[in-house]
Image (cartoon, rainbow, N blue to C red):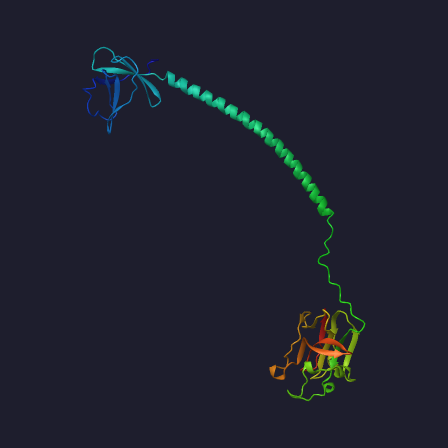
Length: 292
């Protein structure tokens, strides 16, 4: 049974005489059935395996510790021997097994780590190569010129742009809502009237361009710009701040009708149709336009 580490006295009896409920924590050994009981809140609990010589000795495991019981003589008490030698050996064996398992695991991990380290090295090399390729591409990348600018429309030999001032007198109108000519009523003859100050150029784009100095304009003059109807040219006014705005078609109010044009009136000049842009002057003004 191993070395006796400690002893204590416990009751002994037969199974038939075992109290129905031992005090909590108290041991009692039944010699006729070789059983050891301990008192618990719910009653007696059998805590041993049947190993040993009935009525004389008993060995069992209790909470990880091997206990030994031996009957000595005929007193009403007996000793409990605690032998922990096997338990210690088991723990040592368990620890050694754990060490061996962990050593094996470490060896496997190192082997995997070696593979991983090699893969990391390979990946690092690949990344370095990719970075070099990226740098080469960035340094030798063609410059993006941006979206292609549309080619300016090619004017035919008989297409022009007209711009300038048609004075009120050249329109044959009279003052008052009924007497003023609307932009839809302006004609080629008015454009070519000797009193009109009109510039004629080959059809093309124009930057900021004046339609006439303020000193040369009067109240009720018609500013005018003509571009070929079938062209892509768009005419806008300068807003005084360098911005571009459309012409106000109702600059005199709805009761006067269309006293401005924004490309929605047509004039035929030398048998060519032109879109009309312009605005009626309420006071002497210098108007700047753009042709894009």
